[in-house]
Every structure is written in C-alpha cells, then in structure tokens.
Image 1 (cartoon, rainbow, N blue to C red):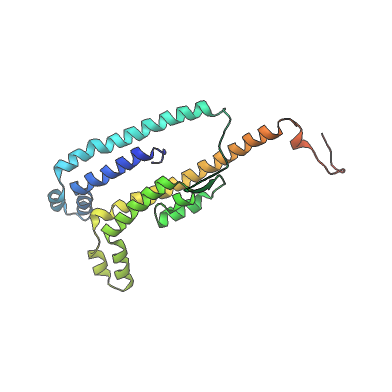
Image 2 (spheres, one colour):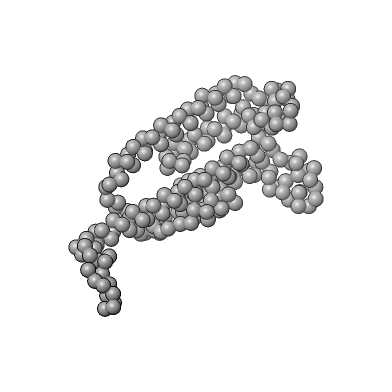
Length: 221
C-alpha cells in the first residue's frame, strides 16, 4: 500500500488478517509475553500458522521486489518533464496539488488510521484504512476498555480487551502514520517539480527573468 499498489495491498492486508485470526497468532504471542508457553501451544492453530509463514515472507519479498522496479522506473523518468494537472474537478469532488505538512498527516493517522490519508486526498487508501481501523477497534474493545479505565475500573478494562484483535492496532496505527508522513513528502516534491516545469515552460523565452530588478536603484541584467 505504501507503494500505491492499492489492490495488491488490500488483498494482502485482507488475507493477513484472515490467516492471523484463524491461526490465533496474536493470542499465542500474548501468552508468550506473560510466560504461559503451554497455553500458547494450545491456542496456536498449527495448520493456519504454517500457511502464515510463506504468506508473510512472500509479502516482504514482493514489496521489496516491487520497490526496486518502481525505483528503476523513477530513475528513468527523473529528467523527463512533469505533466501533472494542478486542479481536477469531477462528479466525485475536487482535487488539487498543494504542499502538505508531513507531521500533520502523521498525527491525524496516528489518532485515527486513514485520517492522514484523507488530509492528503488519497481516497482509496484512506477508505481502506478507515474500514480496517473501525473493524479492529470494534472487535478489540479498546474503546470499551478506555471507558472502563476512565471510570476507575482498571481490572475490568483489562479483561474486556480482545488480544487477538488488539495486536493488529500497532501495525495499523504506525503503518498509517508512516505512510501519511512519506506520502506528504512525496506530494511536496511533486508540487515543486510541477512548479519548476511550469516556470520553465512559461518563462523560458526570457532567460534573464530571474535576474531582473525593476527598482531603478538596483542592477539589471
């Protein structure tokens, strides 16, 4: 998803959650964290866990291989002029290119995964992350736990949590924040390239445009 391969990322995300959930992997991890190794062996579904191993490493290999391919294409296109419309208007809304603050996008995605992507107008990953984050928040009962904790029921707030879904949250939150931060930087770079290409196209006839001074007390070239 960080590489903007949205369909492939959504499919891998979906199957990761399905396989992880049926393998009880997160529950087994929590058991190992607290030293209950025998319970972890009972909780872990070996059949689904064995499916998870090749799937996990394939996802890593495929993302690495795709990144190399995209970087190669990017290197070939570095010196090509950038043709990006500054403003597009259609029935689904209006989109325009402008500079973004990376830390703002990261902060919004850390608060609610997908919000930073909406800030960057990346609708497809934003919608995907919103759906997954709402599903995970509801199933892990984190908000119920937070409410009980605020009311002073610390023990009950721990009991209501579902560890199988809770351990999905760190990867979704930090992954979404990292994605928003990186994409904001890329959008800013694209904005600068578009401006550079526009100025070169519009003002190329006057090679001394940037050196002119209209104040009579200043030098002119």
